[in-house]
Image 1 (cartoon, one colour):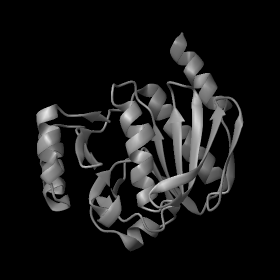
Image 2: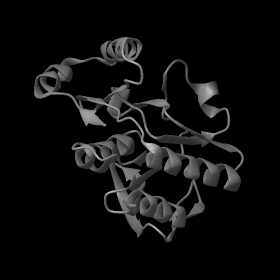
Image 3: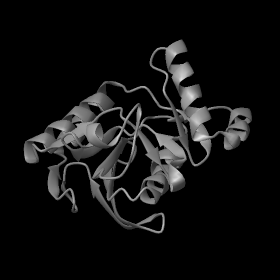
Image 4: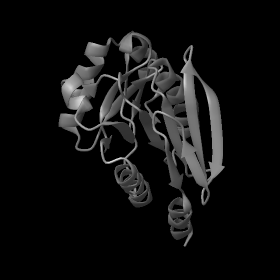
Length: 205
């Protein structure tokens, strides 16, 4: 996700959730593929996926559905986040029981209650460190989402954040691409990340 210019970042602190949703809807209609987020009071643009990013997303979709057919990994689903649900994010993946979001949410931005895990896959832009590694872990922890999975293409590592408490994930486990990583309850599955290493090797060619 790429933040907009400094002037916009100053103005967006006054954005209400309703005003942001209206702005995001207008932006999406005016420019194909443009999706806005509001995280930590800052307005940003969700980065467009490249081929490797999309391939990693689909790898994870297959892993989750194969191991737990009663789950859906929603791709590109908007989510209400942070204290008082004032933020709006578009995770690369939102893991929830089948039909859960349909039954509990209306419109583009779903409620976080009952969501098992959010997923972000880093993009090669200047805001990745701040957004995916700092702002979003805080936002998802504030939303009491049990697990936040970060697939980090820069470091070639998978970071599993869990045990949210007081707006902070109390536990963080880092595993290099190519190894098996355990996702804690309520997810409770293991991911063999060899495929991620293979995809990154293809990107290097």
